[in-house]
Image 1 (cartoon, protein in one colour):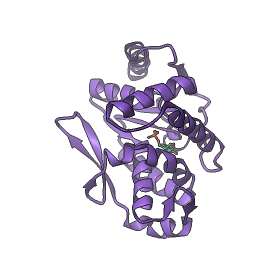
Image 2 (image 1 turned 90 degrees about the horizontal axis):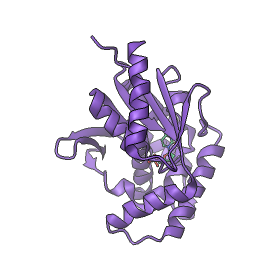
Image 3 (image 1 turned 90 degrees about the vertical axis):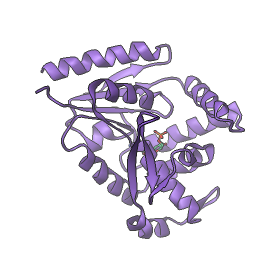
Image 4 (image 1 turned 180 degrees about the vertical axis):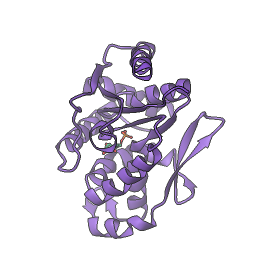
Length: 230
Ligand code: DC
């Protein structure tokens, strides 16, 4: 039987981690987990409960409500990937708005939130055969992952990609506000006390500012095949 390894993909926001991770999961028949979606769902919950808004955040209320948050990924056959469910409701579209992007880094900085989500992520990956993307997968969630990738790209490139995605979905956003959001999330994600975004010592860095998806995919497949062969 072929060995099923653990693949950790970390990096800055909008570096295309999930696009690559989904392709890898499909090729190797692995489970794909988008951990950003889990933090986004908690931010959506906090927003709906009025625990967080543009200029307020009742951290204690969110912490004391964490037990009432149930998160689940359910595979959608038509889309070919798993969608995020928050307390049995499909929130896949709601969690991708600019509003949630503006709240999520603050929510993700709370240690109690991280503790809950990291435990769930470790449980999902305990048998290997998983591709997980996020910010702390290679450093905290799976420090022993057989393959760790760290993706980077310039803030301009990332903002432009995210801007095009949101415009295509019909969201009324400007490039400037997206760029500001990308830079602000980089700042919060890299400077928070608990599990800041950093490259694990043994991660392989891929700067995809000038790299196409196919090129990145092939490069990572080669690394996976080497790991599987041992
Ligand atoms: O990957 P994303 O942009 O959907 O992630 C949303 C936010 O969640 C991101 O700004 C930081 C946070 N996050 C995190 O702190 N740890 C993870 N493993 C994944 C995401």
